[in-house]
Image 1 (tube, rainbow, N blue to C red):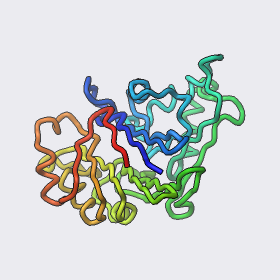
Image 2: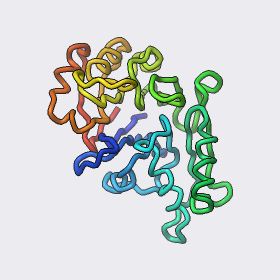
Image 3: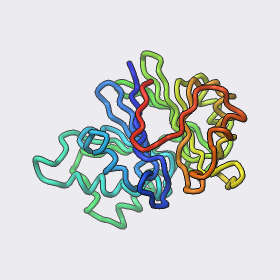
Image 4: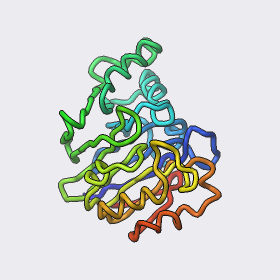
Length: 256
C-alpha cells in the first residue's frame, strides 16, 4: 500500500506567492489525511485536486498560527448546506493540551466553529501515555520534539511496511531520530539556513544530521523562511546527509 504525499505548504506565515504556510497531505488507500493547516492550506488543497470532503484526519504538530490558523475555516466550511456540506466526519489530533487549545478557540468563535453532533472527533496523543494509535489503513506514532511544549512529530506506517515521518517544527531532536529510524521518507523543517540558526528550529545541516543518523531512505526539507531562497540549502544539508534529498515546493508530489 503506497503513501502518496503532496506538499501543500512549504513556507511560513510570512506571505509568499510561491509558498503557503505549513501543510502536508498524505493519501493512503481510501484515506486522505493532512498534517497542519497553516494559511493557504485550503486553496492548495483545491489545487491538488481535493476538497475538504476528502479529508478524514488532520494532525497538528503544535499550536502556532502558521500551523493551525485554517482549522477555523475548515470547521466553519462544514456548516454549508447541501450539496457543499461534507458527508462524513473528521478527526482532529494534536499533542498535549490539544483539547484545551480547541476549547479556547471554541470560546472565542462560539457556534461558528461548532460542527454538527457526531461530526467531529478530537484526539489528544500524549507521547508519554498514548504514543500510538491504529486507524483503518494506517498506524500513527508520535514523539515529543524540541520546539513548543506541545510539539510532536508523527510517523505514519501502513500494513505493507511503508512509513513517512512529519517533523513539525523542531530543533535537533534525539526523539525525532528514533521515531524516524529506517523510514521511507522524512519531511523535516529547515526554517533557516545554517548561518541564521534560530533557537527551536532546524537548519539544513541539522535536518541532514538527523536524517543520516535515522537512516531514512529519502529526506524532504521544508518550512522555508524567505532568507532560505538566497542560500544553497542542499549544499548545507549535504554536509551531513548522503541519501536522496528534495527541497520542498508547494504541490510537490512524492510516492512512497
